[in-house]
Image (cartoon, rainbow, N blue to C red):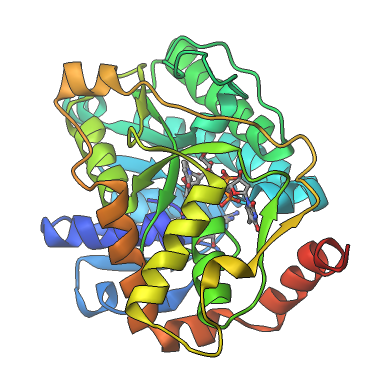
Amino acid sequence: MTGGAGFIGSNFVLQCIAKGETVINLDLLTYAGNRANLIEADREACHIFAHGDICDAAFVGALLREHHPQAIVHFAAESHVDRSIADPGAFIRTNVQGTFTLLEQAKAYWLELSETEKRNFRFLHVSTDEVYGSLRPTDPAFCETTPYAPNSPYAASKASSDHLVRAYFHTYGLPTLTTNCSNNYGPFQFPEKLIPLVILNALEGKPLPVYGDGMNVRDWLYVGDHCSAIQTVLENGRPGETYNIGGNSERANLDVVHTICSLLDELRPNATIGDRRTLVQFVPDRPGHDRRYAIDASKVARELGWRPTVSFEEGLRRTVQWYLENAHWIENVRTGAYRDWIRQNYEERIAQ
Ligand code: NAD
Ligand code: DAU
């Protein structure tokens, strides 16, 4: 797998290990990659960490031949929309060039396999619902045949990588699978994303920055459910197909923020801070901010029997509890680079 030191990847590593599977984890350890996410995994001999770049063809090729994997699960990416607006180049490099390099190396490796190994090999590409663009309030949810209409540099780079994966199936026969998932949340998410950012700010009585009018809608899926969907598609998905994955939990951002405030007021009341909803601050919007995402996950349910198991309310409670219990992890991720990003993205917004 690639990107296994990031948020979803590290949850996936733990799930694989619990199933007794061996995982070769290739990760560059960018600002978003964190070895502390893998402390538990590192205790197991079946977790092998390889520090490297998916854009490094020689490194990827050598790793494949050294470990002879049966599948590649590709998580590695630049993943934060606001950063893609500030610095799109990094997204083109990793998400487009990196996926291309990985596909080239995977194809060369796959062509060397025996006929049986070739038939059983899979390349699973982890993608996003953002490739489909933005929905109006009454539009039907995104399905696998919804035309692509990416609106941010991040979404455009992921759409581009999805097209490359599709082309490698159609042109070369590489047995690929693609999953397009909605917003994840849960343990180990880097606190630049809405849910962990709001948990940490609310805990400390800091302003809770809500972009625009707070009425943008996202569909939320607990990360463990996303990982089980990926396992399901990997084991039983049909090569060449794409599968939409979602939580059937559409929420406006302001509702998400209010729910976090209520959970923290209950679990960590603080008389000085008082009612945490008063910390909400409406700030200038994200440029090109997609209004609504919604996922129709009926194909993966019908064909492969996967459904989400954790409700948004239960998942959010578990997530808030995890951040409350992991102060040391939080302290370590809030490095100088993290503080620089918070200053860059919020200082002017909050001053307005
Ligand atoms: P993340 O930003 O938390 O982690 C990305 C990981 O990739 C990090 O460990 C980083 O070090 C690694 N990485 C980055 N560039 C690399 C490179 N050039 N070579 C090797 N490793 C590199 O991301 P995430 O939120 O865990 O998302 C994982 C994947 O799932 C991404 O492809 C993302 O597009 C997709 N996705 C995410 C969500 C979500 O809500 N977070 C939803 C749908 C799909
Ligand atoms: O939909 C799947 C995507 O979900 C993934 O592909 C991305 O990798 C992942 O980052 C996520 O993208 P979003 O842009 O939806 O997530 P984010 O947490 O950045 O923002 C969620 C919503 O909250 C979005 O409408 C913007 C808003 N927001 C975000 C931040 C960071 C705020 O209002 N304030 C904030 O400070």
